[in-house]
Every structure is written in structure tokens, then in C-alpha cells.
Image (cartoon, rainbow, N blue to C red; front, top):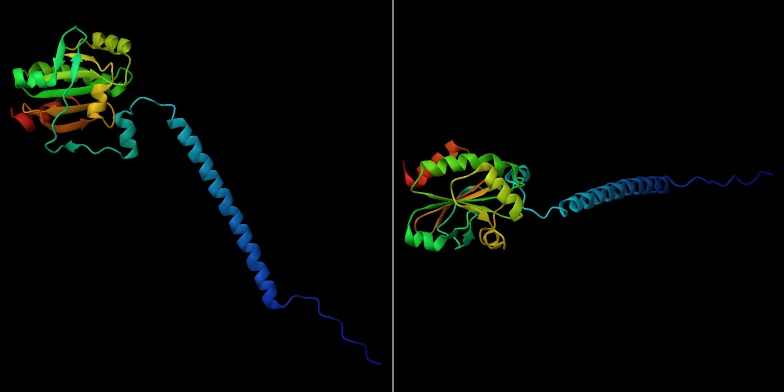
Length: 212
């Protein structure tokens, strides 16, 4: 008597293909999960490192991130500010414009900002060449003692002081340091300059706006 044929135990081809696809999807999903986790951990690490810095970034920091947009401003009125300079005198923007009626080159800096330190001799030299422009330096996001010490070291001839209450920094809100503002005799911000400048650049900027 002929016996029964042995029972097939292999899965149908469609089931095998489906099982293979599921395994591939599981492996791919696992890889994606690992990559997402690594990216998230890297972002947390980077974010943690930036929160420890309270001072404004320098222009070089911003340039690397592509966050600098330098160029002429619109007809924005320059915010008024008052400053007690390191020699004890007082400077007020509105009063200066009313009394002397000359343009202002406002430079914002900090003692911890290396590009600020490098450009200050050029600013001082330019201030002596351009008697018709009032140069004013304001140390922002800085302690008064190191700011004063640095100013004495450079021995600039134009009025310079510290933004002790943060009002100048809040009013002008620089993208980074150093930052300079060319203000017309009418009190309008003609141009914002972000980053270190040399004497040739200062000459070009002032020549563009005031001739000479």
C-alpha cells in the first residue's frame, strides 16, 4: 500500500519574501533610530556649550555662522544716550547734535574682545584726522574696571566710557563686537559697521558720507 506523501513544511514564496522585507525594514529602522539619537545628543552638547557665554559674540564668531548683514541703514533715528566718560566728563548724543551739530562715529567695544583691541588705535588716529566728526567709544557688556584699564593702556584721545547700566547696548543692540555706527548731524544712523576696521576703511566710510 502506498503511504501518504510527506507534508511540506517550507513557507510559500510570498511569505518568505514578506518576512525578508520585514527584517530589512527592522534593520533600517534601527539604524535610523541610532542616527537620530546621535544627532540629538550632539545638539544637546552644542547647545549646552553656548549657554555658558553671556557676552555678545565678536564679529568673527558671527561671520563664521553667516549671521552678518553689514551695510547702510535706512533713515532710522539714532537712539539718544548719555555717557560718563573715563575722564569724568558727560556726553549726550542729543545735546551734542544740538550744540555742535557734527556727525558722530559711535564705536561699541569690550575689553575682552580682541578685534576691538586691535582696531582702537586706528579709530584714535582717525579721530585726530577728522575734526568735524565726533568719535565716541562705549564699552558694552563689560566690567568697568577692565574697560577703564584697557582704555588707559591704549590712551585714546576721543571720549570713551563704560555702559554701566546696559542702556546703550539695549538701545543699539549690536549683532556682535566690535560695532560702529555712523550718525549724521541730523541724528540719523547712516551706516552700521560690524567688525574690525582699519584706517583705510574708516577713511573710505567717512569719505563716502561726508566727502574729503
